[in-house]
Image 1 (cartoon, rainbow, N blue to C red):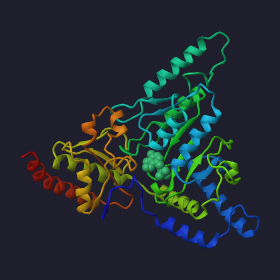
Image 2 (image 1 turned 90 degrees about the vertical axis):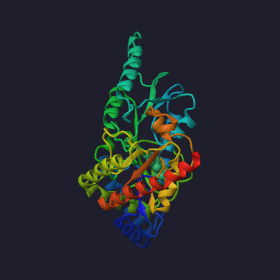
Image 3 (image 1 turned 45 degrees about the vertical axis):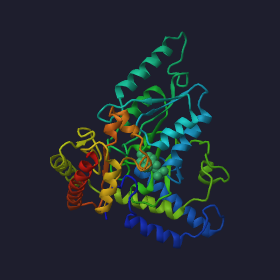
Image 4 (image 1 turned 60 degrees about the horizontal axis):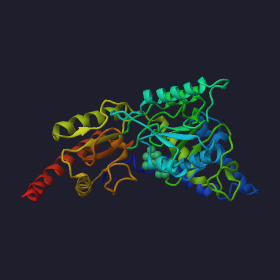
Length: 398
Ligand code: PLP
């Protein structure tokens, strides 16, 4: 099977598998136990924390291990709901993953605002800059006001913008948003799930909050992390234990964490140049082979592995996936969580695409081992699927 759905989940990296097996055999104790078997597991966990902190550029004590990015995002908004002023808002980009959007909606049903994105799939920095300036202006006009008053009504107490979008692969200007947040004294949360392993992670640790998920870069499923504000106190989402400095209760997944860090260390060594070239070649050939196809955000900076394409026909998204599956190719009809339901992708809608256009979207997401030959085979399968679907469409019209 040709696997082009790495943005949904990616197979285990050999280094992660080895680290997991070693850890399961060597670190059998519970890191919270006082005996030496427990202490050894605790030491291994601390070492992994140090390594991850080094990769991200933060303090090891800023890191909390979680079950994945969904838990991490939920922790951020849970914490925000319990610590921000009662009238503070949360602002998030209109293209965040549902784990961020839904958590924000749940905790801030009337106090969340979506930051628009451009047709190119990039968060609208000009909009954000103007909004923050006008709000600060209003406060600065107040007599005797101390600037900046970060937590007043209509003012964001938290801004969330992802590093890379999971559907389009567009690299978001998270650093510029971070700088804006710094200027205005607003905490910044960056969902870095689709960036980690594909782009260098250095600098992400400067964000107040960062989420990551091992299974997107060759680690095991069910393990991730949350980078928190400097060694800060976090209102725990999970209670019932003092693990992770009281920030996340539950026995730590030592083999999972060690395997996650091993995978990320390995991915950090990988170079992307040749991979970008394969993707560009595929995109060009796809447009030639299937007139009417369109590459979404073709001119925007994107990660090397992702292509979101609108296929030529309007009614065929799920049929394409099924047809390609029969031909031995796994692709996605959008984000992992959204596929299966026929609502238009909120990402494409936010970019200004119509529901009919969004219904034509197919996502191809390659992995680190994907070769140029694999891209060619994907193209061949698409051409074959298209030709086999043509007679079906004609007979349905009769
Ligand atoms: N954020 C993004 C951008 C994602 O793509 C995903 C998974 O698809 C998640 C968060 C959720 O990650 P997890 O599977 O670790 O809960």
